[in-house]
Length: 101
Image (cartoon, rainbow, N blue to C red):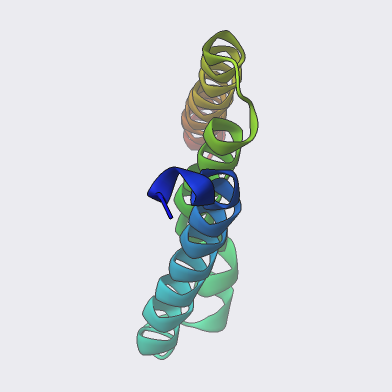
């Protein structure tokens, strides 16, 4: 039996591996450093801890879900553009907040 017989089952396996490894490494990382930050700082900085992993999982899902390369490129550019919009908006919010205080 050829390896190509298993190719339809490959994308769900790759996505599940990506999700499980990403969430397990994040849980281990947070678990190791849970006592180094006060709880309030942990709550404030939790989006910056989780956002890169969510972006990788979302991009992985998009790249594994759609068969057409044009569709993959559109969704990937949308994900990257949304991430940059979030980062620039966060930086602008910080600069405005610093001017007000």
